[in-house]
Amino acid sequence: MNELQLFLHALKQPEYLHVLLNPLPMYGLAMGLLALLLALLLRSRPARVVALVLVALSCASVWPVVRYGHGGYDRVSAMSNNEAKQWLDVHQHRADRAKYIFYLAGLLALAALAADWKFPRAALPLAVATLVLAVVSSGLGGWIAHAGGKVRHSEFRDGPPPNPIEPSQREEHHKHSH
Image (cartoon, rainbow, N blue to C red; front, side, top):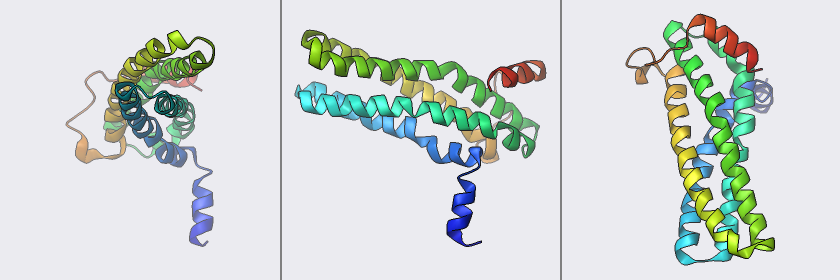
């Protein structure tokens, strides 16, 4: 197989797509946050609209990241030692709990965009609320990524996760997360 064929084959593997897409929520949201902060400081409506679109798209990108993460769980788990499996479970558990905050931040960004058309007085407070919730989402993204980085990178591990998922919880959680 040539390199293009290998790449196209890799795109069929959910764990590969997860790794490929997982920077989008973090880096996209960071850029959206910076743009939104600058737009608010400059009091620029066009810049605020662009920033809110960036925040909404970045938050929406959480959905495929989580979906492909679930899809690749079994394969990554099978190639992992016990400590890595514990971190994988914690990573998945954190993502499953925090994804709703990202979705809420994205919806709030869309509400702020809609307010620019229909309810201009509400647009600025909604944009500020979006900024706050996006900061929270960004922090949660770091919390999720902290556990995720330890799955395949043993050099980052200082031992098992502080609150490991018990085997009975792991099976129950994995069953409901699909």
